[in-house]
Image 1 (cartoon, protein in one colour):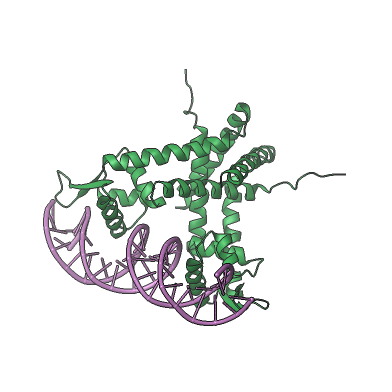
Image 2 (spheres, helix red, strand yellow):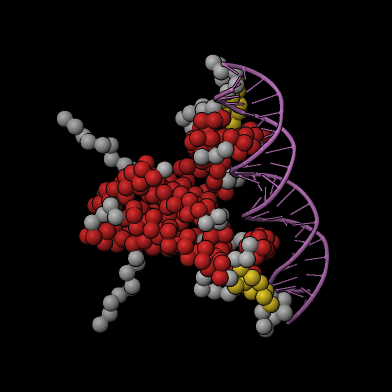
Length: 148
Length: 148
DNA sequence: TATTGTTATACTCTATAACTATA
DNA sequence: TATAGTTATAGAGTATAACAATA
């Protein structure tokens, strides 16, 4: 009689998967000399030139935190600030070439890490896993839409 | 002709799930007035009384970082330090009652968040999702065992 | 007056380097 | 000498409150 390995509780599985993803992100960010927050910011700026306030909304940060975050990135030449056209109070943030190179590399390597892990599944399993996970994400979005 | 919603790429699904889990952890930690790091530390101390050095190994932090982390938690009465018996250089860390209450609550609520999300799956789907996810985690562990 | 952003301040978290105490 | 831990220092990241400029 052998029951095999103890089954992993589902709650533990989802928690551990979350930690694994976070660890990959931290490692890839650090390899590009970026913090996770700087990486998120550059990611947001890949297809937007938001105002400071909009950037804070994307990142869920106070405006004063955004000022510091952008200031440090600007000092490294990763982003730049410029005044908005139609509102003299607003400042917009733009990704510079160095910043784009950095985020493109980090994002590609992070995606590669995830792909490597997903290689453990057959194509059919992968399809099924993705279908179920999309349901989990929809449930989370619904819960946040209601609760928050 | 309607192709339905655009299928979520698997890489995006795993990334988003990771972010969702991290967000839940951050929110539950903050609700207990804890940072994620403090929460992780209290979690480690739930079933151990490690030395400062061992605690640093668990958390992957420099010894000086651990000193500060423990100092701040001790000031709040969440943990305490005491000299080890057999080595006069070592200091061990113990979870105090207030700390245990805090981490037990935060952990239960975090698990509740995850359970809530998992409620989107039927029991059969849940079993299948967990089986596949365990394979992903095993692949990640193998990759880290080899690369690190 | 209201909004947008910056600055001053305070705290957490992190690491490196220098130090103390013990082995 | 080597190891365990603390402390001094520096910097990122965060928020609150006070401020300046613009609307």
